[in-house]
Amino acid sequence: MKVTIFGTGYVGLVTGTCLAEMGNHVVCVDVDATKVARLKSGDIPIYEPGLDPMVIRNHADGRLDFTTDAAPGIDHGQVVFIAVGTPPDEDGSADLKYVVAVANTIGDHIDRYTVVVNKSTVPVGTADRVRAAIAARLQARGVDVPFDVVSNPEFLKEGDAVEDCMRPDRIVVGASSERAVAVLRKLYAPFNRNHDRMVVMDERSAELTKYAANAMLATKISFMNEIANIAEHVGADVELVRQGIGADPRIGYHFIYPGAGYGGSCFPKDVQALARTAHGVGYDARLLDAVEAVNDAQKSRLFALLSKHFDGKLTGLTVAVWGLAFKPNTDDMREAPSRRLMELLWDAGASVRAFDPEAADETRRIYGERDDLVLVERPFDALQGADALVIVTEWKAFRAPDFSRIKSMLGTPVIFDGRNLYDPAQVEEAGIAYYGIGRGRSLAGHAHD
Image 1: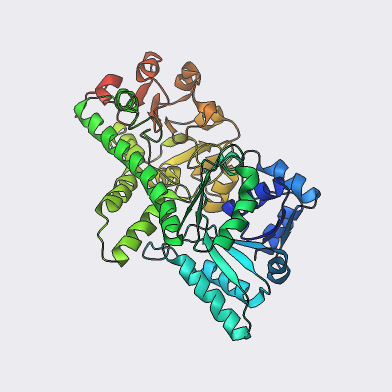
Image 2: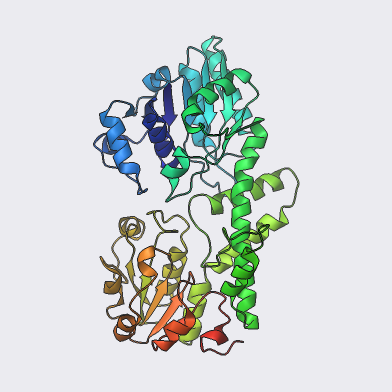
């Protein structure tokens, strides 16, 4: 099939590439000429395992192309995806200006039946807004062209996005038109072979499904961080608690890992947007507000532990940081806990030496060159001249380090483990003070409060 995708960000690029991989002819449209030129030359602007070779191969084979020219893009597509950003507005609600701009462009150019697919994460009712925008442009042109608007939210995990796209656990389609559903059934048939993963519903339910899924996962994380903070005060070990509750199949082990708070492009933005949607219709979403508040506080937890260990005297200290991306297998720094930690350390007069396998360039882009930030090429390079080590992202390379080497390199041997990667007793045996998240600090040789 011939497919057009507006937006070559995370969702648009992965979706377009996977559709091309299945034999469709895909044109990705983006207003950023530099990004389009990079993609055409095989320079992929995001890090996602497995994505680069797929983009390069499908572009070389003529199934995947990139352009800044909207008109031929729309002319190409039987199905036109809207996969542009919906950044938070000043009040936290999703800003739909880019989505509406694409809808207007579609309305300016379509001349035959077209299925318009909202792939962006958008508030409930956006399909109606897109439909109205396209209809208004058609009316201004004085033409009557049939079209349908479908909500088809993405459920891609950063770091596993290609796998999630090629082998989805569900394909949610919100549509009021049987004709549009039939088109999407045909488009998604190659992804849907061993059993029917397509869940068809109305547009508003599909829009809410996306927000509900992310809010549910964010809630589990904030809940476990709340339990971790309680464990710390009462002298329990949250890692043992996690195993004890995860064994219950009604709860399960997924997303019950405490840590330094969630980040990324989805959870913070979507929890906030769903709460604002609720408030906008007169409903006080107290649980969502609490999820957001707990997460915001959790991002300062590592700094609080550092400050307590050093009696608030952080000026002049150098802190080694392992992990900058908000999660492993990505270079995404949006809302990353590392950013809060580093900014608090800098405000307190400390310097940072940091290592991340993928996010160094993104860190430089955000913070520029500064005297109190050194980005290094290898994990142990971060420890040179450092007074403490903080684990912020759970990259596999950090899971089994040489603790004797860590002890010998740190000025004051102490690890602040923001992902509970290590056994406190093992770290203490190596002669290193240990702080985790909710490890009942008495277990790590510290009297709990």
